[in-house]
Image (cartoon, rainbow over all chains, first blue to last red):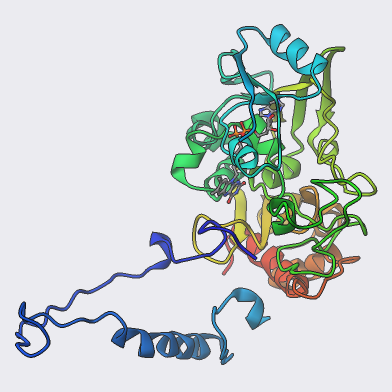
Amino acid sequence: MGFDLAGYHVPVKADVPDIHVVLIDKRDPIVNRMGAKGMGEIPLVGFTAAIANAVFHATGELIRELPLTPDKFL
Amino acid sequence: MIQFQYIRASTQKTAIETTAKDATAMFIAGGTNLVDLMKRGITTPQKLVDINNLPLKNIDASTGRIRIGALALNSAVAENKLVLDRQPLLAQALNAGASAQLRNMATVGGNMMQRTRCPYFYDTAMPCNKREPGSGCGALEGFNRMHAIFGFSDKCIAVNPSDMNVALVALDATVHIAGPKGNRTVPFINFHRLPGDLPQKDNNLEKGELITAVEIADNPFNKHVHYLKIRDRASYAFALVSVAAALHLDGNTIKGVRLAMGGVAHKPWRLTEAEKALVGKTVSEGTFRQAAEIAMQGAKGFKYNSFKLKMGPNAIVEALKTAAGIV
Ligand SMILES: Cc1cc2nc3c(=O)[nH]c(=O)nc-3n(C[C@H](O)[C@H](O)[C@H](O)COP(=O)(O)OP(=O)(O)OC[C@H]3O[C@@H](n4cnc5c(N)ncnc54)[C@H](O)[C@@H]3O)c2cc1C
């Protein structure tokens, strides 16, 4: 149940580790005229599984449903 | 939109008189809770009595106690030297709550009075005995992940959401109240109430009564303290479970202890029996685990919050370990 972003938790600064920005210095002339690549959805596929696996490594619990809230580990 | 009148009270007397004689009048301090509730149509005062001009902001110490005015800001209390030196548990609990912006607006009196975050209380399309007495409790059979495991009734299983209250109940604070019939004081532990048959009443404050201050008598709990808040994200979230732990140690011997939990009941939950079990014992994880088991006696979970039956004792052990400085 929720009505707004106060109840729907997205990570806040305190949750997020250091982020390293890697610039890929290579034009892609095929996708668009700017030569830029879109990276919106591609990273989404792997990272939830990676986090779930990291949490599995830390806790011994493999949770297959998001979000990975504390209640699921008890 | 609801229409309401706004009055800025210049004296305590007029603030109390105005609010006492008008059934639809309410005090407003920082407004961080009340304005939200008004926007959602949960609370519908027709007169707001702004108390921010009253001289109730001071934090001072005299004759073995700290006195914190009801209008002292949460951030001002958490940063206050007297509080940090003598009652660091209170500062920790305050800093665990809300966000810096909110703490800069929120007052001590308003924090004590903040309403539950139960989603059924917030959703005016849902039944809620606290918002609309007699309409039923949506949480009882509903989505009750955040709800109580102690002291609930079949009318209401909501919890008190405040972090500050957990520290204040642990520290045996006293509430100073001024009202139409005069002044009185209430031990903090008796300020909030259990839901029983009247879940619409969060506390024992009478109509028109104004919280003027909170007092904490000096105690030996200024060194080994810890406020542990377990929540869904690292900041800006209400507690699933929280623990306020304070130890008075003589070497490794526990001379005194104060223990309370948040997120588990309709009021900040003092763990008196667990405290008794700890006094005189030696600091160790095993001792803390035993006390945590005692603390959880009588707890009962619902469909989605049974995890608190495990999280609760684990949090108690962790908080005590951190307070004692053992890892
Ligand atoms: C997004 C968000 C996140 C939050 N997260 C947390 C959290 O993690 N932990 C936490 O503890 N709190 C949290 N809070 C709640 C916050 O602590 C409260 O909103 C705040 O403490 C209320 O204080 P206020 O002065 O703004 O009260 P107001 O909104 O002005 O008043 C609240 C109630 O108190 C009454 N009142 C105020 N002063 C007095 C007085 N002196 N005497 C009698 N009655 C009085 C008012 O009439 C009203 O009913 C959060 C709030 C928000 C909006």
